[in-house]
Image 1 (cartoon, protein in one colour):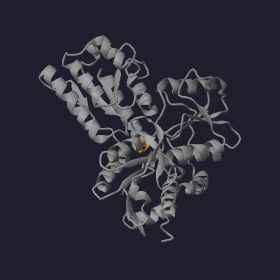
Image 2: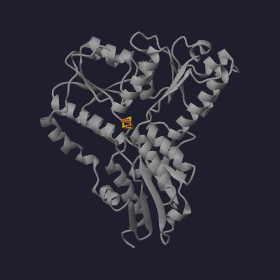
Image 3: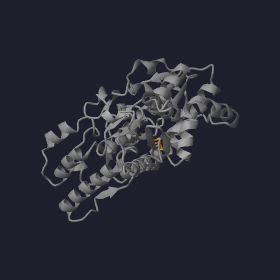
Image 4: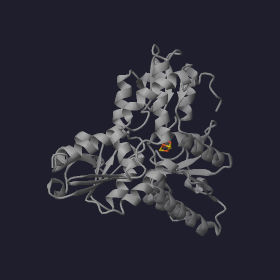
Amino acid sequence: MASSKRFINVRRPEVMAQVREDVQRYRSELVDRISEDGGVLELPGLHLRLASAFGFCDGVKRAIEIAYATCRMFPDRRIWLIGEIIHNPEVNARLDEMGLRHLPWRLDAPEYAELQPEDVVIMPAFGVTIPMRRLLDEKGVSLVDSTCGNVIKVWQRVKTYAAAGITSIIHGKARHEESLATASQSRGEEEKGNFLVVFDEADAELVADYIRGRGHKETFLEHFAGACSPGFDPDVHLRTIGIANQTTMLKSETAHIQEMLKAAVLERDGNDDRFHMFDTICGATQDRQNALFELLQEPLDLMLIIGGYNSSNTTHLAHIAARKVPTFFVKSADCLESLSCVRCFDLQQKKEVVQPLPEAVSDVAYTLRVGVTAGASCPANVIEDVICRLIELRNCLEL
Ligand code: SF4
């Protein structure tokens, strides 16, 4: 892609000094103290354990700082953000208050027609698609890029696949911004590369079956409609495949999908020369998943997973915990309505529901054992609010 002359570096020392003060709001002394104390908070009636890796990753911190720096640097210009800077409602609401406007992830959206050359557009941590970037270049707007370096590494991988005529099999969510951007990169500037997005092991099984010659083309294409490159022909485009993934997927699932597809290619060809793979799950996602597995070794009555409901990495944390212990995926402190019920995201129904809490929660004579973690887009102040709400409900400080 030709580099835009309109890219602006907003992370200048004089701006960043102010921004570091702005983002103090996302810190928490309480959370820092719990971490320093080995991740344990002991109060009468409450034994709380915080995962050893949780909350904001470096890519998210950087994206937020860039958004704040852009507002500081251009107080008199219209600033647009493509989609959400990250998937966290508190952070996004604050940026909205600061006057940021939103460009939807649909190029035919009327907002794009409003863009003027003096406008500033922030590209989010997930990156943007090549057609979006091209349109922004045509509009002549100033661009501020907050794309995470780990996402760019995935792009480099799928571009390498495309250059070698390899179809990218992307383990991710077809409608997630990051996968949309990665899929676009796998097409390339010329839009000649091919991709297929597989969401889970069931999707991978269909692909593996097709590779083994057991699939039905129409059914296959119907199933993957909207999740593959235009003109995708499984008879042609599954001949040589390369795996990549959305950076925030479940590591163990990605590993299994790789094995499934490699085994299918091996069975078809007698060797795996036409199979390529590269683990592109980022270290921050991996650290948070590992820390949760470690935390789940402890005896716990329940787990609180904190983060935005549309956050992919947080959703995976909730899936991991739910296999082991009663788990409640909450986005903010007010979700803890009472000692008996909680508003939380239901992983099956994919919506917020009100659920009863385990009986132990309302037994204040019992020392409740609670595990806490948060996704890579969740600020520490929100984690603190949730912990304080739990303490308030359990009346721990009064006992
Ligand atoms: S989760 Fe990983 S890829 Fe996503 S912003 Fe954070 S560091 Fe970057």
